[in-house]
Figure 1: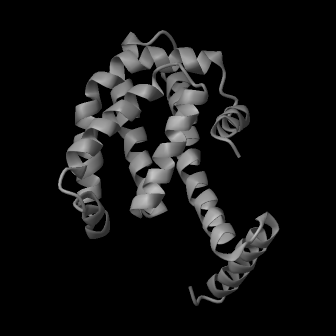
Figure 2: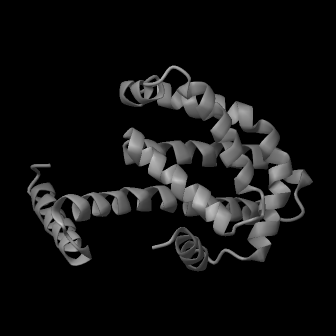
Length: 194
């Protein structure tokens, strides 16, 4: 799936429309100035886990780069420009997460921290919004879930590409492997072994 196709599919699935886009642009004026505080919370949570902390410290200048890129990513969420360039940037972000070995649980947890921080800041500024707070939070949730889908899809696509390259497998074989693995894990989980 091409990045723009994923963006369009997620926006259709989540009923993301022009009103959501307008609300995101509006709330960006209130939230983007807090990107530095978000970065502090975001990376403090990752520092609390030895595994994620090791990833952050794997390169000497990684932390400073990541603070900068987190701010850029956050600003882009509120750009109102959800086009092919946006989708391509999100796709690259996802692939970088896979390349450096960030487990998906850290991605999901980190996105939840972004959501909670942003929703709290929106609540504090609710009187400055041009409509009900719930509508703004819903628009934010749609966009964050879209971005999360890019990262999650990157894991699946990277796994498939590796299998195809290493084993000459095609999509049907990959799907059979995934299904077989899920069946075995479900049996173990239901039996209390996993």
